[in-house]
Length: 421
Image (tube, rainbow, N blue to C red):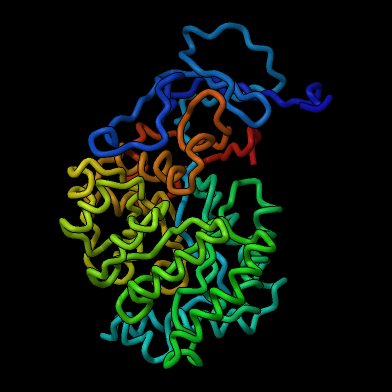
């Protein structure tokens, strides 16, 4: 540390009704799998002491010694939880797509809309026309909105550029958000989101553009943490996905991929084979996919908000948990299939539609969300030494009330890096 220790800020939170998501020293885990996901340690009537941006200590009010802190906040019985870690979003986009929402209501499928030049291609056109400055402004506003709903770390993908110029523009916007945001942001390079119109008949040409032209620039400027591919029938095939993931690894970009949203595509197996950090979506999952995941460190990430919004089948969360796998939840915030970064609402959907318990759902979007971004050493639970990114709720009867009280924001205040925001 520099000689700035005299300026350290200390925050003591007292009279916490329930301090949730605790990991005791020496018992910290990078992720929770299977039955472990229902474990959710809580201290009732607690205090929490933050030094600088880290959790220093915590315990029961009855056991609290005198702590000299210049800032003391009386929680008056409120609940405190680790902030949500949203590990899959497309938060940087130019414009909404409510016309496609209406088209779907009238009977067109997601795939039919895509074939008409809607979907991802629609977002790519709109993004291409928007200035970098304006794209940054609208995205920053969205970031603030999800933080107000409890998100304390987030992943953001490119993929609405589909040209070297526009993909780099998106990634630069994400980097600028990273630099100016109080919460950690991870960036995923997703040029392989769809084939642009000029390459529809020339897949090879677009793969070469990504591998030979885009990837070196992305790596050179340090613009991405992960390489993502939409591995799906009508998008990128298994073979195309393999080539892209291998190319990404050469530049040190680990895979996180979109898999098995619309079909049993083999995407899960290809993700596992290439040591993907996570495979995301997973509406279509069978025994083969489960067997592949069992032998791996790859985290299955479910995006039920997209299934809800598209009106398609939900992910078989219970099947995954019963197979002793870790399950992560994320919003998939994007303008086409899930225009919401609202994690409390996601928790409701996970509980009502995926039959996850509140404990499992909260673990899936805190510790396991952090694991899906390789950040579980610093985020995702209340543990000594972890970053103090916390939710202080309104006065609620219990943490199960968060998914129960659906559509309402449980967050009264956020602590980010140890300070109120």
